[in-house]
Length: 294
Figure 1 (tube, rainbow, N blue to C red):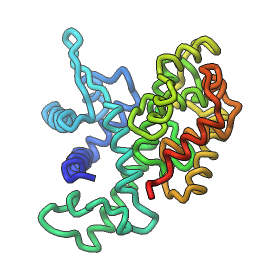
Figure 2 (cartoon, rainbow, N blue to C red):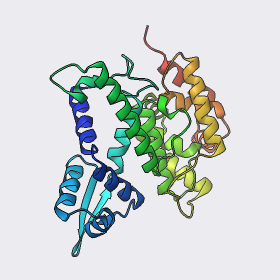
Figure 3 (spheres, one colour):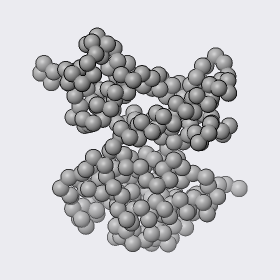
C-alpha cells in the first residue's frame, strides 16, 4: 500500500478522532441518504453552531460528509463511498487480530501514528485497539452494508464487488442480494480476475442487466440492510472453500466467481448459460487465470 494512501486514511482516522464527530456520523448514517440540516444536527448535539461548523468542515474535507443547499437550508449527508473504502482498509491491509497487529498486517502503522518515528509496542497495541473500536463502530453505523460471512478475509477488490452488488440491488429495487447481483458486482469492479475473465468471454454488465430484468424484473423497494439469499450465502461459502483449496488466505474476485459457478443453480449461472457460456469451460478459465505464474 502506497504511503500516500496510508496518509489519506490517517487523515480520515484523525477526522473521526472525537466523540462529537462520531456522533455526527451516527446521526447522518441514521438519516442516510437524505441527510440532515445544520439546524437538525445542532438540535440533536446541543453544541454551539461554531463548534458544529468546525466539525462538519473537517469531516467534509476528508470526504466523510457532503453538503448541499436547498433554498435557505444547508443539508449534510454521509458519504458512503468513503466509508466503504475505510472498511476495506480496516479489513485488509490494516486488519488486526484479537491481540495486536501482526508484522504482515501492520500496514506501515508508523505512518498512521507518527510519521517521523517508529511506533513503540504500547502505541502499536493502542492503535490496534483503536482500529478494532472504529471498525466495530462503523459496521454498527453502516446499516446499508450487509457484511457477508468471512468478510474480514475479503480483498479490497472482493469487498468492492459486494458493495457494487448491493448497489445493483438498489437499482433494481430488490429486497435481497442474489447470485445475479454478485455477478454484476464482479463485472462492475472491472479490475479483478473475475471481471477480466468474464469480459474476455464476452460477458458485459449491460447484457447481464437486461437478462436479469427479463427474468425477474424490478422489485418494489430495497430495505436499509439488504440480506443475502440462501443461494448467495452458499456461493460465498463456496468462495471461501475455493480460496482455501487454492492455497489462498484471502477471498478475491476469482473465488467469488468460482463460487457462483460451483453453486451452478442460481440466477447468475442461468444468466451466463443464457448468454451462451459453458459453465465448466468458464470455470477452467477462471482457475487458469487464478494460478500464479511459475
